[in-house]
Length: 383
Ligand code: SAM
Image (cartoon, rainbow, N blue to C red; front, side, top):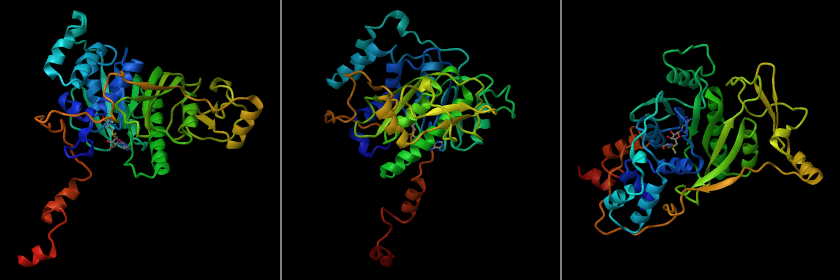
């Protein structure tokens, strides 16, 4: 979060710095947790595309330090947010809010046996209780790295799945957005597939998968595909995610791999060859069907547009539509609104400046050249 970023008027950007989060994205995960109670009973988690690390920070503070957010901290947050928006003193708001909490709720509740593994292409500054890996989630070589980080003592290099699976996989992966919507949506969907295939190797039955998606033309097809391996698939838009952004989050619960299924990146979950019958479990009219092959891989038949039309007219069915939820308390900040700030307000530094930002080299070169655009001809000739 750069100080001169165009995001500086955004309420979540400022609040993140005040509350010690590395990025405003922390609020997206917190608001998703508020809605879906994501961390209930969770001790083992993989955070994909994690840098600069605000989601990992949330994990560390909830699981390792036992702090309460989400549903548990809801009342407190609600009070704080209201008072903050009214321009009341932050300290006063916090102390006042504690009055609504019971004695038990004020006690941190650290969990036992916690393991958090965070992966990103970019390096990440360390966080308490979090193992960070610098790796590409689309590359097969990341799987053994992840498995080793999850179970360093019992790691078997021949294993393709985790001996002690995880409860939750989260992925906030995003490509460098080009502004060409179709291209951005395509690259994003590839990241999502990579995240899902990594999740399939480590999730335990009943586990959860939460990932960022870009809502494009065929996104309902993607939801139907996820419905193949999860009991519940819902889409959520946290209040801290701008309405103008095409991003949303898919929340998949109740991991239910079909019998005989073996996760493998050699045969990743994705489009396969033609299959005989549509899978009824995917709902009437779904054009996605599945089959578990002898080697344990799932093959999908994604159907075709023509089949869609036939299903729509003859059976009265339609593509399976995932329920959509707006989440985050209505009294929370609106990320698209501009809030007026007191004139004497001091702008804070980012909590964790990027360790190796892609623009670092450009800045160095600019400095060497003597300014924003290097020296002008006039300046050079004076020397
Ligand atoms: N959740 C993070 C947080 O709260 O701080 C923010 C994630 S940021 C929106 C998206 C991240 O995706 C970037 O750090 C980027 O490096 C990462 N990313 C993009 N492609 C990736 C890939 N193929 N493998 C690993 N990370 C990737």
